[in-house]
Amino acid sequence: GKSKKLALIAVCNKLLKQAFAIAKSGLIFDKEYKSTLVKN
Image (cartoon, rainbow, N blue to C red; front, side):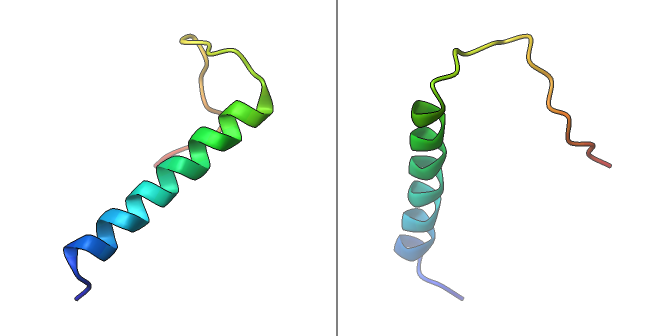
């Protein structure tokens, strides 16, 4: 398997990408928001 450090870095990168995408979109946080993606 992969080292713990590599896995941690991958998770950090994913969170950073999400954070910057949210910041760039300029949308205000809406706690009533429901995702349109259907999960089984």
